[in-house]
Image 1 (tube, rainbow, N blue to C red):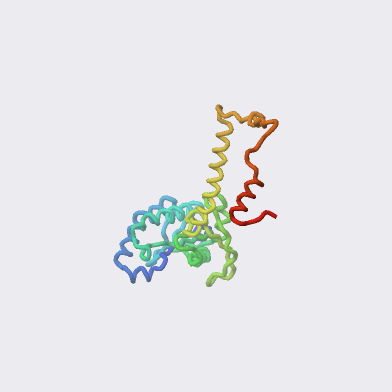
Image 2: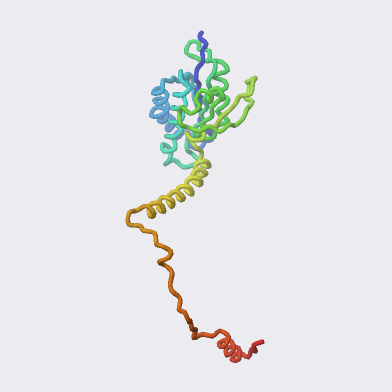
Length: 245
């Protein structure tokens, strides 16, 4: 039996029972392909190993929390394209949680709060999203190139102490967040483009600002107007029956 600090990744399929009821054969076949072609190779490539398998999920262990996060982000970014041709209500999506904690290794299996916290955190992730514990977040910081939104301290089942939780905001953004990001980015991009065009017009070699003095026109010394508003108004008022005061 060995005890050490490890990064634990827990993943499960969203709505597994409902998907099985809708299309058991199709769901299981696609899940098998996702594991063989994406999930298992990604975990191996990031020096992790799968410890436990369930019908709808898995527990994997990594020596590095950075590599655990890199694997999670890659899986979540790749999944939408793999399920793009499947009807919306039958698509496979995963929730992923990562924790860094004390783990007991015993004959190929793992135990301890480090594992339990990761397993409990899954439910706090959005479909297609990732959450991490405070201990994992403290080690990750900006090393993976994703953002984090604090969710506060959460009480988890069978865990004595509240756990700080962070949602990954850029690695596997939810549809709502992607829409919000587009709404923020496009107006800013338009403003930057307008500023760039204005700067180019001002600095281009053949552009010469016009002297305001050259735009002035000389007025006649004794201007005469052939139009008298008062006379025209009087004649118009007589035609329509109105009297000038």
